[in-house]
Length: 90
Image (cartoon, rainbow, N blue to C red; front, top):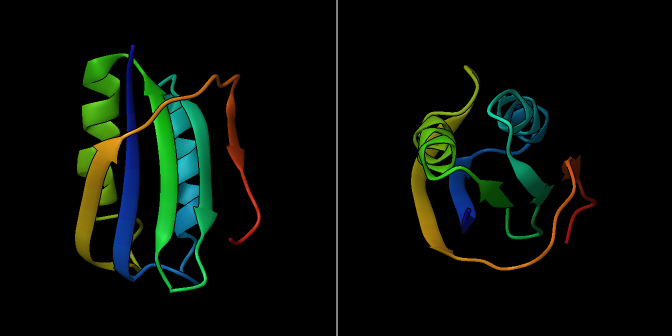
């Protein structure tokens, strides 16, 4: 199992990014969470099959149609997750 923290920058709030990312993560069979951050970015922790984590990371670089992603920071993550949830803004 691979775990990664993604921080997505750009026009990523108010465009359905969290909902779309959660839907894509569930489709790929991943666990973890996603939330908006007060600085305007979106943060996600994803865990699962390495190929699925990489696929979601590639998806996050584009996001939903209305998003304009400028950068995705990828780092290590850890934790225990069951399912994929949308969390409140932090």
